Length: 312
Image (cartoon, helix red, strand yellow):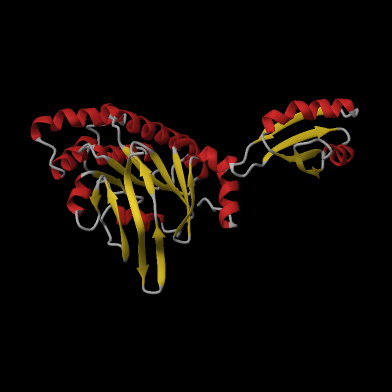
């Protein structure tokens, strides 16, 4: 596999505090890759080292084939960055922001205008390009920041908590644009997030980070399947009796009676539902409803860290 980012025991210490601890990470080219973890996990510190903003205490990394310490200028030329905190001038227009960054990144004058129009179309701000940023909504400002990071055709785009503080509808809109730019611009996207749904729906791969370390990394689907614990919720008129009886059915690992609902812990729940219904019929239980729930990334995170992420 072709990896565009590789880290080798990259570490960052501040006196006695270790923010990032000997991380080895491989990120495939053209991936949308998430570093998932709570505030204070070390996500931003890791991104900052990969972007050459801060130096590692030990270890190193390569971004687009360039060493972040020895070839920092080449790394910077091949990346785009969207920081967690907003960095827009309200008294400039969207177009002026893109023109300024195109000049700063050395986009040739003969293609600059065409490139700006391409980016404006990509982030759906063409009609608002000549209006002041102070008139933009939160989602429009975030799209402009993403577009600004793309102006010089970077190979890697770093997004630090890209949807923090946005409402759910705007957040999903940003996800759509990130997927679009990943496909159309052929850019690898590395983002940090503490939103479980964002990592699950948006990303090809997820690395779970906690207390400065990568605990587990894989595709969201594989991470969830590793738990081997689907939940089937069954409602019946005799929940107590059904709970006691259903554990006789092969594939049902555990059964819990929670009032009118029985929770069954199973593997491959979609394959077991017909057997549960047949079992209930054979033993004269009337099923009112059956609901299947697969494990979530939050379940995965709790398994490997022992705690929840508080989404603030």
